[in-house]
Length: 313
Image 1 (spheres, helix red, strand yellow):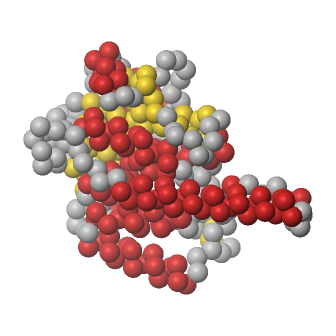
Image 2 (cartoon, helix red, strand yellow; image 1 turned 90 degrees about the horizontal axis):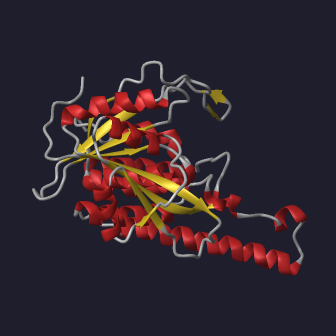
């Protein structure tokens, strides 16, 4: 059963994995910076099947079931909304609309007043460009709110996956909603790209009036850009000197993704120190999330990370 905690005019923010991890990065930032607490887990029933197992250092790990959880936050400012965050490990392969209706039916017991989803809009823009932000809404009143915050209306196209379908389910249940879509360069669809999440949260901050203290995310964006510039400079130098093989000369930003991450002892110690720090203060958890992203091992630690937000921690 769902937690019976009472909320004041709550907004439901729903995020799932997707291109550039744009939605998840924004959702996890909300969770950590606001110090949310886990409320309940949505029973997945037969919506998901286990299709693979993880292998670590040659050892097959126990199968991991897909989990879908709700987290809550009470706004100290009575003029603003409380927030409920839904985080899904994955999107179901079938019966997606039925899943969305079940999700909203479960969340309605908290009296949700609005649904917000985050998504990526893939374009051919370059990494050094100022990234754009688009929005879509389920009614003209909400669309006008977006325009007042200088969010460009998405004039056409589709919002793929549950980021869009849950808004459609909201229309069926007469719950208004919006989607904020951050521009994502095509070259980064396979890796976590925090720069696309930043304009989403800047707009969300204005829409809710909730101060999010985005300096950590901005620092993560700066660090990513610096790392990218270093890689591009190395590739350019290699090409100019013609001292590298064709394979090396054609290296791209795929170097930012390590297909088989291996943690050094110092990295493992650092991660454990950050987990201890986050257990003492949830607001410090994003530093842990950023380090796990940098090492490309967040998926290995995701359930443990989310368990930090249980009420008994």
